[in-house]
Length: 448
Ligand code: SAM
Image 1 (cartoon, protein in one colour):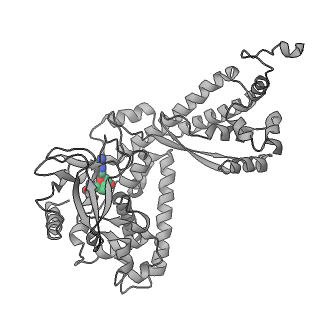
Image 2 (cartoon, helix red, strand yellow):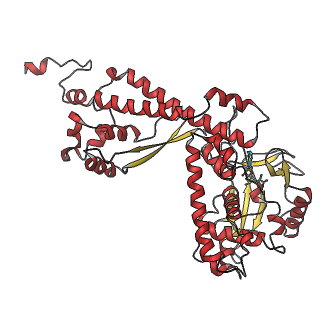
Image 3 (cartoon, protein in one colour):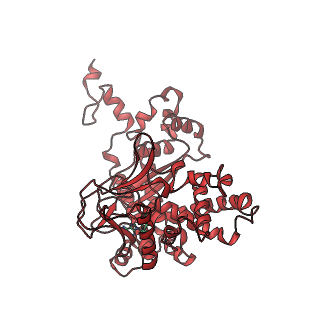
């Protein structure tokens, strides 16, 4: 961002009464992170409100819907689409009230949504690549509808070159990376100045430190305040936690950066496993019924996070999928209320083996589809000169593979230990008192 633009923005904030010598922060260029918010004049205490932006300065869905020119078109649009339209409309207006703010918004974003095909090849084999195309399709179809229903029929209001597909995607990226709770949904809003806060790498907070406050009983003016989550010395940056449980994939798509390195306090490596009861399964109907009774469905997505163990319900669901042959009696109506309890523990050696093999083989196939090895990615990430986009790609590949490898190892180990597990039949005998703890049939029951 050119200094002149930043200066114009600071002047605007000062005129609006938001920036003054009374507040302990200023917007400033930060190394490798674009603009940020820095303590000025003194240090800042933990939990101190460092800035406060009145509602009149927000670019919000409400402003879009009440807008004299574009308001009528925004009534039935999704909140984010209405706000994207407002942003592009104001961006196209030289005399916009938000001119100084719009001028400091980044033109290019590093989210993979904006990568060239060549750059996207760095994500080959990853799950993220699939979700990127999902996002792009979604934005594309929203744009197509907006174009046909709003932009094209109103050439006097919307100059198509200033409301292009590319600019719409840019607006989507801006909204994704600069809006935070509690301003979401119908309350979605861009808040100039407050949206300059960068993500902190080491904070243990759960989520963003934006807060909505109202002043007085009568004027009900709303403000957005930014609270400093930790104390900061003069000249240092105020940062906030964008989301403690967001995976690197999500950070990459939303914000165009990833968190990696030894200082990481949050766990960012993840992989979403999709498990499905096949329609060709001869017990399909019974299995669906059982899944639904337990809050699941034919397809279930399990988010696996590195070193966090298996998600609840994953093993029972795997056992249910694999249930067949002599174990199928558990699918009978008689067991409908208790089958899920039984599936919490190994059902039979055959069933448990099928579960383990399915996972081990699945991981193997997934792991061979990545072009680089874990060590190669680790080496790349050592390079401090690595471009932001290559860093994202390497961290994503590495993270997904780490999770898959951990999962594979877990089930390989289990496969070696199948003989040590206790299965349904033994448990049942033991519960009936017919077997001792060593697995021997107890003699006294026969003695009567
Ligand atoms: N730095 C932004 C700017 O110049 O306008 C203001 C913060 S904005 C809410 C979020 C964007 O800031 C992200 O999409 C990313 O580009 C950048 N950012 C925030 N935290 C970061 C971090 N820890 N590392 C790298 N980039 C970061």
